[in-house]
Image 1 (spheres, rainbow, N blue to C red):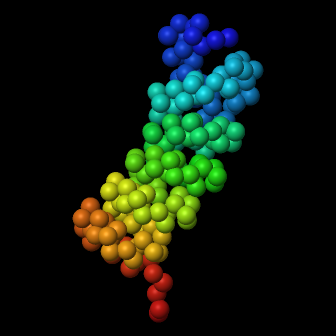
Image 2: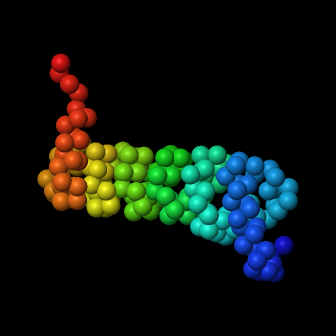
Length: 169
């Protein structure tokens, strides 16, 4: 069955209902009723864009979490969802950039390699100055990066750096 042959109201209803079914982890129900939906990224991505169920991503089937388009749609709704994105995707710059544009501190869920890329860390800090806490050691010591964080949040990010160091006593 082709999506174009369905009326717009029915498409909207399917998209919203599918969003609930997918995030509840009931993919088998979907596959029995609409096997073509699973292979149609458009429907899944649209259901994510039209609803706010991104926070249930952790229950989404792994096969859907591995899809870059689907995860990009989820991260456009909330950068915090980066926490549940599969490891092979959190090492992709374009995925992390989408997340940190919505929530700078989601940088903490990015790979170590990404947390050492200056433009990405600066972008996260521009969104949320406290993202400095999750930058690599090298970038935490970079005066340009620290200046941007201070300009954004005052001394809070810098004071946070002192709190994370181990105590000698």
